[in-house]
Amino acid sequence: MKRFFPLFLCVCIATADAAWREPVRAPHGMVASTERIASQIGVDVMKRGGNAVDAAVAVAFALAVVYPSAGNLGGGGFMMIRRSDGTATAIDYRETAPAAATRDMYVGPDGELIKGEGSSILGYRASGVPGTVAGMALALKKYGSGKLTWSELIEPAGRLAVNGFVVTHRTEKRLEDHQAILSPFADSHRVFLREGKLYREGEILRQPELAATLGRLQKNGPREFYEGETARRIAQDMQQNGGLITRDDLRGYTPKERVPLRGSYRGYGIVSMPPPSSGGAVLIAAHAVSGG
Image 1 (tube, rainbow, N blue to C red):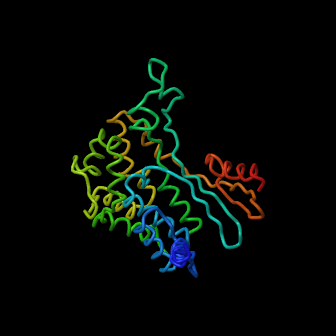
Image 2 (tube, one colour; image 1 turned 180 degrees about the horizontal axis):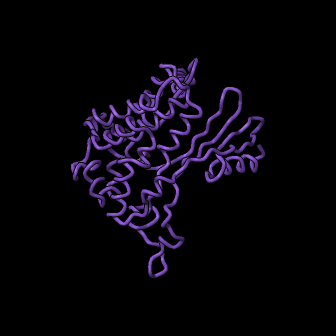
Image 3 (cartoon, rainbow, N blue to C red; image 1 turned 60 degrees about the horizontal axis):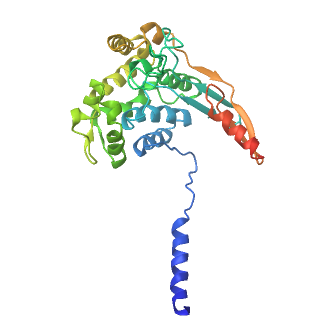
């Protein structure tokens, strides 16, 4: 056994070395997102003098192009902002229910929950009034650096939509895995599934219609999405396909700024999203139960 020991020891050392990595560091800032292309756009924004909020806005619009399974130009979300002086704020730009929504709208005549299209998770009736564009506009207006304009921050996403981006293996698999969700809808089937000829790794995915939407937002500002041509198109599509969102719903959408939740864990402060997000409350409660 002795003669095998040095080799075994070398293998163990090599394995341990490979498993350990130096943490990524940066002197001024860092950007992380689910797609490298979008993250690089955020880095470029900060190199041009933009702050973290400027970068977040640019990345959000880029993800609407390069992360088709969840890029949420037509959705919503939350943004946590912590400033250098330690003060923090939370922006809630989640989707809201259309005015015509009712308590039992997802219950069928038999009293059972509707499944598939027409349910609360699939189809036009599952759509809420989108908040992303308004949320990005509020964040930029109140907390952006002032060095980069709304139009400048949308520009990289617009170029990506026009010129396209190289489909990665992960994007290929995501689109493939979402066939059942995308296929029933003509536009989704045409744009993302290419009428059944699925995109493969290395191909270029271009989205000229999305580019046109981004172009209108660049030229006319964020309210275009809620009051202009884009709003008209959304409302018309909803009306033609059994959706509930109207132009009045879009016109009335307003993001909200909220006070963050605060807690602690083993001496470290936690600053997180308040309701309607459940994540912050669960995080703080979990740490409290664990003895934080």
